[in-house]
Length: 422
Image 1 (cartoon, rainbow, N blue to C red):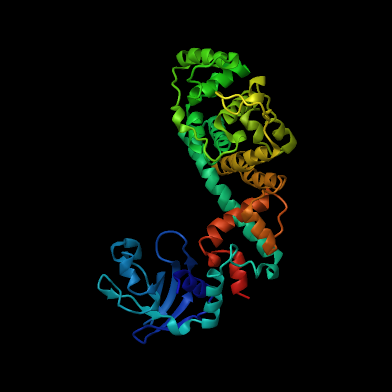
Image 2: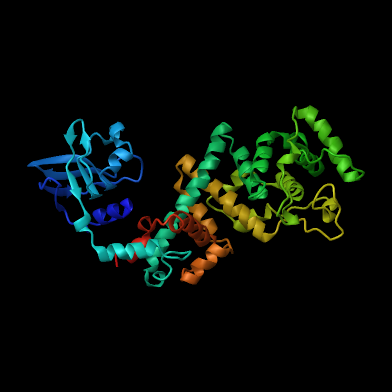
């Protein structure tokens, strides 16, 4: 038995509203209250009729009555006003301030056929737990769940950006650069890119006259990757320029050991990504250009059309020349990743920060204009019968898989509840 299952059948009134306590006293639920997903008792603001009196307050659920003590509720003041204790198995009395809380045992109330259906769902040996039932779910229910999952995903990403804005005393530009930098870093060099962005001050770019060679020297110099001997004319220019910048801005480079190369395609090597990041920094539009209700995705994409010095046509790494020609521009798929993981969350974050619903809605609309991502998780959802037309769906489904299927939280998902309520 799972506690969340008890919450579900209680909330859906599948247990009725009239009960007998373990002391054979009648207990009637007049108001089921509000299900609490945060810390504290499980249902708030409930009302019961018990012992001839109407009691108002929270209701708590447990699989075993003794879980009250196992979970240390006896030391938490939030549980002092609990008016009823619903348990699957009654194995002990629960006392609060020497008063025995009315306790209802639910074993005989559970519909075993429904519980077996729930167990079959959460114990399914499938990547998408409810995949066999998805074709029978109303499309409106799926759409609503996808919208909710996307909101949760964007909210979590937005929190990181809001923290950046606040830690930089309201500097949105700095927060935006940090968000973009994390995408350039990818999964492997996420943190080093963030550290580098933290060291950068956007005001420096104007002092360097937005000259591409100087911005590149600043970024690569800060990374610590320029700290080696070379006969290359381009690298010597970068090194000489960064020596000047160190004195000008009073900065020191990062340890080059921070950067990782293992199990990575050459086009994702940090040297090349840093050069591309520097080129974007030098040509980027104003951050506020992305904060408009009259957005133009084609125009925004143009901000990521960058060009690098010819040196990079034969270099994935600063130290090593390759005979194969290197593709130095940012691929369409990479630019899509930047929009999905940085630009859209930034717009959403500012919407939350300002309380501007137009921005949060706009962020979701932008995702509808971006091609769907391709990965094994999305492939499984498509196989299950879910239509995938854009990044709106793929981002939603990735979140639903992570927070729903992987954690077997079918009772928190509209798809799972739809199947169980059938």
